[in-house]
Length: 578
Image (cartoon, rainbow, N blue to C red; front, side, top):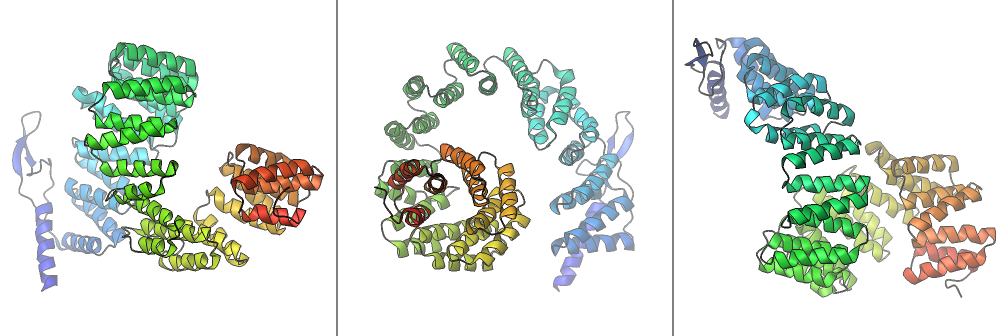
């Protein structure tokens, strides 16, 4: 019975698609053309033949069963056979759903050929060609789309910016936007679009010139003013400050510009001036919850947590639309200021939304720090997970709580169980490798990190962890050096990778090069483990007082660091530096 009903539904669907009665319409010359109820024109007279019916049934059945490749092939065949734009559109949609851009381009090309006046068809083929990096092929379609929207060309260019931002060839994108902009030089949005394309292509002066032109055409445009300030900040911080001040004199109620100006002052460490701007925002927006919250965030960047707390609470009183976000931020402030119980209360007030899970993880972490480890783990285990990513985050959070208690076997078991549920999940692989290292299970560490490198060849931490493990054990040092160098290529500013590189050079006997990288790492981040490594090299060189000074400072920050304590015991036979 179910099969018969499905057959009837499919047959009626095909009848509607392939034999829909046409209405009469006229073309631009006044001649009659066929048009269906959806406005499609010039439809072919397609009979419901047995082969067409068979392809339709196979395609729809495959689609319902999730066999997307079969569905794509059948619908493209149907579009070619019938020359019906509706089937070409359907083939395009299914190809996109299947994640098959090549088939989608083929189907969309048929669709626009069969229905050249369809904005949907032209938008689809243009977007596909852009995503495939075929900007020259996309150009005529984009030109026609813009020409058809002369009354809204500014909005069209703003949408075009979002579309083109996906293309990795920034220089080609800039050339295309400049070409498309030529007929529309009186539109501020068009100059904005060119400016953004220039910015992404690292042509900052052109970006500034174009944004300035946009502001000349529309002086009170806050979005353009904010972007202009950011561009100037890259070229000259002084010029950016002058621009913001001049703009705010003309348009003092431009809150977004004032917020951007304040953030730039904080970045330049001009905190007194930044506080003046924060106070102006508070005094002149007493009933605006969004500006009140924004001022709280600015105050937090300056370390003014009293103003932050009062602003967040006021935003709640004023009815800020996302109370969950405010409670989350309040919890962070309470943590920062050492008020753990109040932080836990705030995190528990986050009831839904994107911050629900992070809040509950922080709640569990604080619960564990108070000594309630069992309750903290139970809290995490009872939280609902909407997808695999959330499941993994909860496992990783529980592992982190256990790691602080040095329960390395339990951490390993937990992550091992997690990988049974989520095989090859990158973050779980990485964490299990770290747990395996603590237990001396170096074969598992190596297997996990090599698999992670295969899954995520652009992950610098996987290369670094594997290379460091070899270096620390004095194993496969040439390979360790290559692995860590690769990690540094992927993340050249990472102090931990610099530390690893210094450590492997030291292990290979190149003490001068090792000391160079360890000094760079320690200057960037005086971490206890980096201090342990740098101190060891200095100690071996005979600079024992320098080593002691570095270790002493590190012990004050982290007296229980395993690497630091092991280094001290091995080299000085003591855990405390006199």
